Length: 112
Length: 192
Image 1 (tube, chains in turn green, red):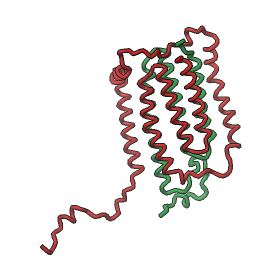
Image 2 (cartoon, helix red, strand yellow; image 1 turned 180 degrees about the vertical axis):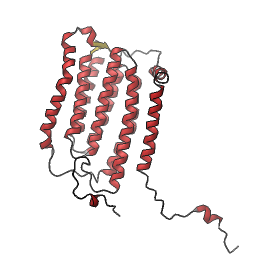
Image 3 (tube, helix red, strand yellow; image 1 turned 135 degrees about the horizontal axis):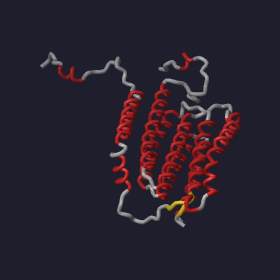
Image 4 (cartoon, chains in turn red, yellow; image 1 turned 135 degrees about the vertical axis):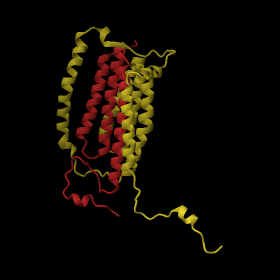
């Protein structure tokens, strides 16, 4: 009763990864949701590491998860700092990566 | 019992992950992200990795959620929703790409599922018994001996992140005129 199938855990982690990937691809209007989907991808990867490490009875996978947590936290901190500093002197950021700017001088101008 | 709990929280995790990318409001997607992290930490505790589960709650729900909430609060007026619906154009591309991504990943899992016996593909999960050993002791003994250099590298990365964030969000103008308190106090008046 207390055993669980490895295949179910792997299905779950892989489907979570694909959901995060679809969130990165499909989302075209909000850059914060893109960051959240990247967090979901990192969560699925760390879940996969922990499941494999418990299945193989090996601690190195769980050590890697600590590194992944540190990198994810630093990545989201940097990205949010960039967003906040852009919001200060820029008109709406719909999607910075995908939108073509027609007049770059006008949109980067300081507002007082 | 614990297996049913694991299935339930796995389902909750998937539903919340779908809610993250499907919600229109940013705050709702943030809340469902937090719920998905909570259910993931419960799943990890059921699997037996207590320390990592608690660490996930502390880091993600405690720190990253507040950071995201702050960013939503600052930037929500600037984050305007585009009027034309781009999702109808890009959703078939996403679905096709998702299916193409799913197929090669599920192939070895299905091979593992159907071709081997039960005892190699299933493993024991936590039985909720109190054991004397602590997880953190094992982590520390491995982390500070075999993984000493990666720990130092992660520390350097965190230092760079702190410096970069404080550089990015710093708004002190050096040319602004401010009063210097020491100069003012040390100046003698004519009237005594």
